[in-house]
Length: 347
Image (cartoon, rainbow, N blue to C red; front, top):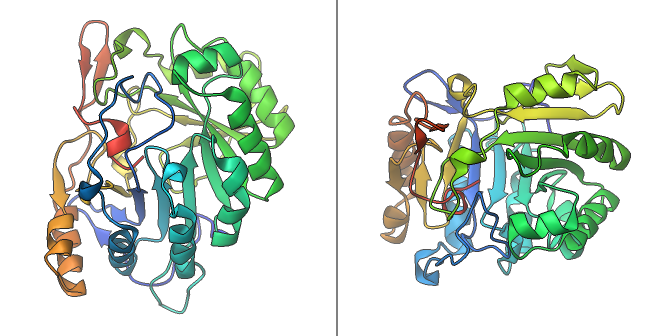
């Protein structure tokens, strides 16, 4: 079982950034490819990376091992859509070998996954066998037509089948919903009630200005401070100190018994407690989701770097981690963010 975020991990002490934050959480994108084209994430006519630019699973294993030896205790596999990459379950099974180590050894407390759910039906049991106990599933609507419009090519029925398979396999599910003005803001009550029925938590996320998607996201931006106030008029939202290692801040919905999370990079950023770095599928290490600075770990890896040299490169990169992001979004400011797409960043 995953170790609680409140329990101190054994093993190597995490690397500390210039602002005293311990970096114990790594998100790894295994591919920039996806079988959907969500309007807030990708352009409809995305051009994906040449396969030669993408790390092999063996290279990713080596880098993940170096991070774990540097004190990382939580590892999340992301994309793109990670389950579209052939061999990803075997890759995660190998990572699962780091789980449960104690007595001062390097190891993982938790191995998790973020997915759009389209391929969960065939992979849920494999994920559980690999050591995964908790997953996040991106789902922005329960309306089939609206789902098609948001994802451009997705099938709601297929994603719902995947969520059902994950629950059946014993995976704890958190639904991630991007809150969009004029798109799905009328569905949050419905999503809360549905998550209560299926035994899932729900996390609402503010849209972030990342990459050219062909959409003007300033018109879709919906502050979660406003959403929470609206929800509190219908639901009893009870404060809780629950943490999963990421940026979400949770309340408990008394009527359903499930948690409701809020990720608010725009209205109230979570930078002061950021414990995360992101590794792209090309081996670029992004110290901040909302900054362009990155460290190239692929070059030393392919040049035959020793383990000590990789550890040194990781420490040097984390020493450049900024205090916070520079995201701006609004009708006057329009948008200011980063040019790369979320799918190329590591979740």
